[in-house]
Length: 360
Image (tube, rainbow, N blue to C red; front, side, top):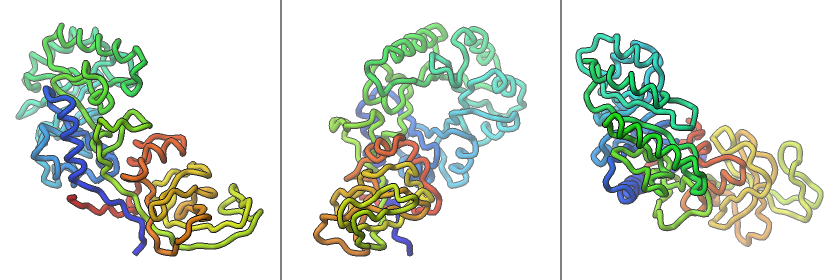
């Protein structure tokens, strides 16, 4: 069997959820498990958290259906709402909460013939300018929803912060002022905080928070990691050395020989590549752990393999363990070296990497 596996600690995810609740004890914290729980396996994560959370959140209705088919019974918030009128009935039948962000979705909702009403969240564009209704639009939308038999009474206003990971950016306070004014004007509960805001912006804690990235033990505000957050990385991406060779000065490694030895060097090949989700653009020098020791990436990442410089390691053999990211090498550090973010690496994990779960 190929040695590349991702080991996921479900206990770590439960711990990280408790941390979200510790930082925002007066809020109800929805567990965001979109994109296959950021690569960690949505069904398994939902099974672990189902007795601990008030609701889950996913991006699309297909993700919500997958969870229902697996026996997950808690309410599921669909963050992008519906894309077709027929999905309104599916949402009502599945106890999905719908986040509405454009007028067309509201028109479908109001004209639907439903046996049971749907719980609705209204997304308000407070400055990110991606999705959401203009604040002024609520003057008409809120009374209309309140008068509809298709809508449960407890509508929630929601917004998304554009720069919560940057404490110096004034935009966050501007967004908070806008959404708080909307909440006060219309007398509705509100959801503001993502992971970064849960940890860093207590002013953003509201009736509902939406922690996501932090649930998987990764700091949403980059590096260095603030130890006071006490987040436990849930995934260990591991493989093994599958080949070792010695090369002389002037010899290159990998496609295009982007890395050339300046001295006699020992090169190890590891059974992981961009076909697994390891970042294609990780440059020479990107850290990798072999036998717990840091070694640099050498040469281009290929689909099925990477190479590292083992020169200087006293004892290294084929079959020795490798950590690509995990508790000893934060995914954010790998991401920074590769010019991306940890979110992309985790969400980009491909289906050929087995997920192995443990409860310790």
